[in-house]
Length: 462
Image 1: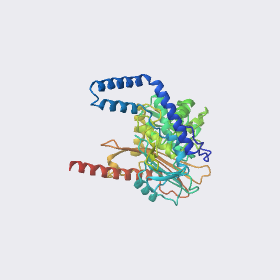
Image 2 (image 1 turned 60 degrees about the vertical axis):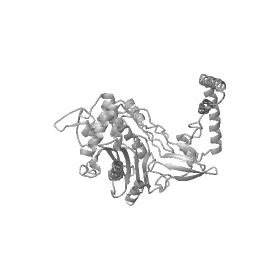
Image 3 (image 1 turned 90 degrees about the horizontal axis):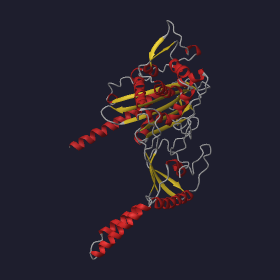
Image 4 (image 1 turned 30 degrees about the vertical axis):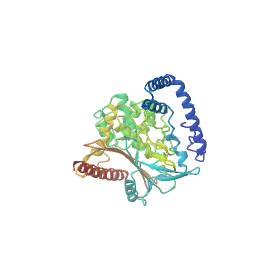
């Protein structure tokens, strides 16, 4: 049933009849029942044997006890096919043009085909409203903030602002240059393919944040710097990642690991979600640009940024984001029920641990150190392990600067974890940075989480 009514993202007008869809489900159920009976004839024969034995026993005892017959009937009932729910990839048919960004209520009522449905989302509305109040709409062209549970894919916040087109959700938009966030993919490829560790050493010449062809050689001189992979990642050193792309990794490796982290592919989501784009050719400087994120051709959505980070905290396995927990019709009958779903492993658990080290260093000693200053003394942040990756690049017109932060926060004495992906496009003046929004998300979410956890502990002990 998946994909039967899958809408082309370039043509949002296609919306088949819900009745036609339900008829399709009924046909599937009938066919499913026939197939189950055909394949499971030995199981049915077993149930019939039990029924015959039960009938013989009842007749021999005078029919005073019918418990066995009732159990047999229950077994026959359980053998019938269970009514199917709609698939995740088809939820957008029911939602139609309903906007779920910046929600102020939960559940949401949706009218479709003459009926009313209640759509329960996974959003933490208190967190969402907090973020919406904090947004700097004066100095920003776009703001997109995504927070997600990596263990389930449930989205906790999806808050956005689009000055150019208010009807377009910036959290799902995949036109933004990925910038240095792509260094996560490059590092994963280098660790997985070449066996690098966080301590592996690299040489580079020139400035950290430039990328000239003369910086992509193995020549050394008295001006050559030596740096570890961990520090190169944390400080976002372009020449090191450029050399990895130009001299170490082959074209196929960069492309393959990009695809493994869900570039160039559709990922099931309850709303239309454009594809993030990555194209790698075999020219060495081009590979250097791609590997370091020093280009505008590799594009990414903030929602996809959260998916990438989920692979780091899930031992290499990305989770599918999900926004809808449950949908019921006007009679209270479930129409859709969310279940955690995961993509194939992007990297091994060993590689994921190295990426964890690199992202942790970004907060403790790298480009995110300033925005998380004082976190070891902060009442909330001191109880968390923090990691992330920053990125920034101007658009082609040079009138907007894309600013990224994608990272995670994990409870030190517990298992609670969230991933955060934030993109801000600053205009003439730098307003609130992406890392600052990420810190707001983490601090606000875990402040409430710890308060509820401590209250639960008091209630159970009392």
